[in-house]
Length: 143
Image (tube, rainbow, N blue to C red; front, side, top):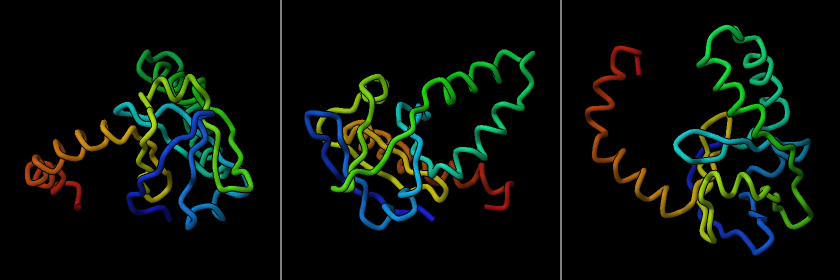
């Protein structure tokens, strides 16, 4: 289970340190892809395979499902954790997420999200300000 918020820096080659507590879970392979809200999603290889099957089975006749599958699948790249505990994030994904030097790695149960620190700060402030309204809307879902 991935939880928590961690602040790290990218080096000039686009490598990002993964929090120590998550490295074992990702040691058998990982996949990074375009996420939502200008973030990147990082999955274990096993979790990615489960998601990829679901995406591949979406109805191709619907434009939204084609677009979402393309966003996730075409943007995906397998990554390995190096001996220093870092992954190399491809340039096209760094550009997509607007990643600069400072990054946030956020644990969201079955995936990690990677954010540019400034983007994360703005997103978190907006979400926190709307927290009560969001909670009320989600109340019907049993949350």
